[in-house]
Image 1 (cartoon, rainbow, N blue to C red):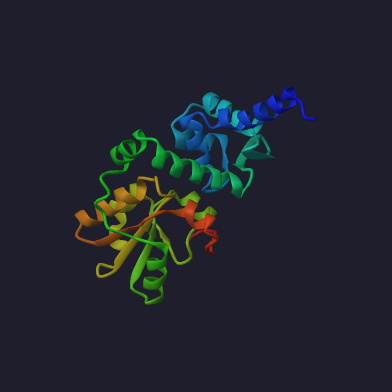
Image 2: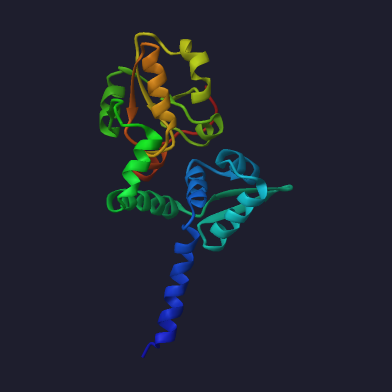
Length: 222
């Protein structure tokens, strides 16, 4: 018969994964890696961490099996260990939003009150087939190049005000970014609306798009 000690060892092994996720910054790093492979330096800058702290968090995630690495010269590139890690991240966030009272208030404080109009993936597909929109990716260029929704154009949100003239004035614009809890698309829709443009937000983003096994293009702008 199985011993109590062996059962305890099994659950302690499970707990390593839980402990690795018990950090907001490590969850943020997983969210960034869900957009594509990155170096430690790029991750530290995107997450607002110094290199030492970012490296320590990444090592914790690696020891738990959530991320994998490859070396290119002196640079270490990190990536998610598998799509199941992205699925776990997405599920964790939805479970927390559903069952933890503090999450909806924190979400609204970060993203806003959700007053911006939004469309679903199904509505996006129907409108795209009818040729009625411009699909705008407002993530950083390197994330767009790592993978984007087919047909999307890329204008990073911090460049949008200066490049708004690149978007047809009479077009409906659907904006997306990293995922459901990413503020970039919210900020872009507000900015476009302030300029009098018709803009709505995709109600999730690239993370959920990939997990739904929707088509993805990669590479630089045409």
